[in-house]
Amino acid sequence: MAEPVTLTEIKEYLRIDSEEEDFLLAGLLLAAKEHCEDYLQDGLPSQVPTPVKQALLILVGHFYEQRAGEDIPKVVYALLSPYRAHLW
Image 1: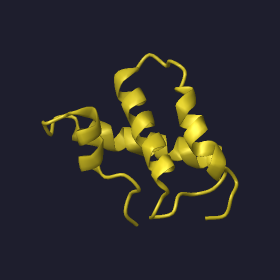
Image 2: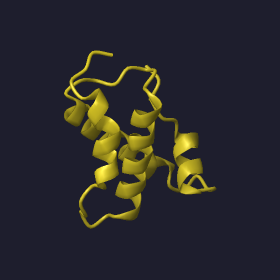
Image 3: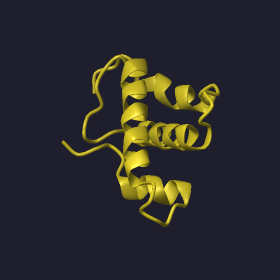
Image 4: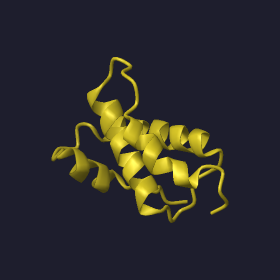
């Protein structure tokens, strides 16, 4: 199954040109995806709504830039809340 956000989209969002961080970004995407699925109380389909995709990008960016365990931005939950526990 394809990921809801591609590595290319993440790198464009974070303005990363090199391939040095690809392995790290793939791991951060996995963590962001699992966090979203936990919050939504459901798995993500292959075609995610735009707000959910944006939440994933923000989360990956947050995990990439804030490695000391800072709180997740509230906007992530604002983007995800309309889809929480709904059937896709």
